[in-house]
Length: 139
Picture 1: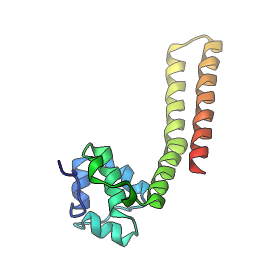
Picture 2 (picture 1 turned 180 degrees about the horizontal axis):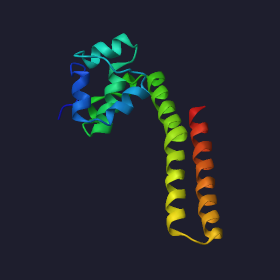
Picture 3 (picture 1 turned 45 degrees about the vertical axis):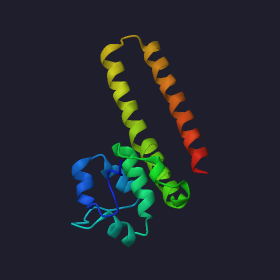
Picture 4 (picture 1 turned 90 degrees about the vertical axis):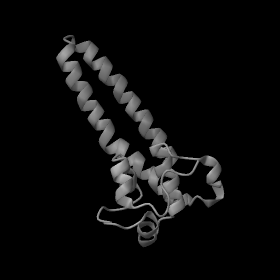
């Protein structure tokens, strides 16, 4: 089996195939507006290792073959940048969104205040642990 996406794949084909890859692209620091350029061309312009980018993209989109990618070909700096940006997105956007939705759900369904406080405390404690864990991974 070959990788789903290759260096000669058009960047816009990646998005057409799997729109969730837009988040992956931004986490690598790739802005939109690449027109008909290939993965190789865009990565070269932005000083991003195409093998590392494609390894992540193919893993996320379900087209990853680990035996085709030797571990020593992965650019650790690019991968760490991606992971830090993914962590920041989760901490800065996803966790607050989950908390707001949890509050809305609690307000709609639970009348007793002590239960509301207990549920929110549980979530807040969880959020602190996630932040602590991600801070550890980022350093």
